[in-house]
Amino acid sequence: MIDDEKIIELFFKRDQQAIRELDIKYGKICHNLSYNIVNSRQDAEECVNDAYLGAWNAIPPVHPNPLLSYIVKIVRNISLKIYWRKTVEDEIEARELARIIEAFLDTLTEKQRIIFMRRYAYADTYADIAKRVGISEKNVSVRLTLIRQKMKQYLIEQEVFV
Image (cartoon, rainbow, N blue to C red):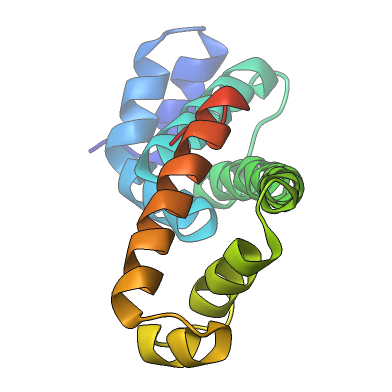
């Protein structure tokens, strides 16, 4: 394994071996750091590759010392940007899915809505639901199956991945 100064020299010479040597020496640290932030091997790989590109574009003129701190800082910043972007996207998707499910619930009768909500929002047993709405447990089971089928079709029509 070559030392940091030799890796930096390769960057200054614009030798692509610099990236390979950087990865050999600090790749595992960079990947672990990024994975701990983004919690995805694929996203971590992209973050580290973007960090290497960032280092390639910055060296020269920058002469980082120590090299490890420099590359780790780039990896951390890129990983945090990805984390926050995904968090926002997940919130938007969750709100959109909630809106679609609410619209689906509006297509159900009041009794169907009660059965569905008591089971999936309140985790009531079939027996509890049956008592509440005055039907048999078997009827609750059949109705829930039909509601789930209807919901699946509705989600497909709304272009929600099922």
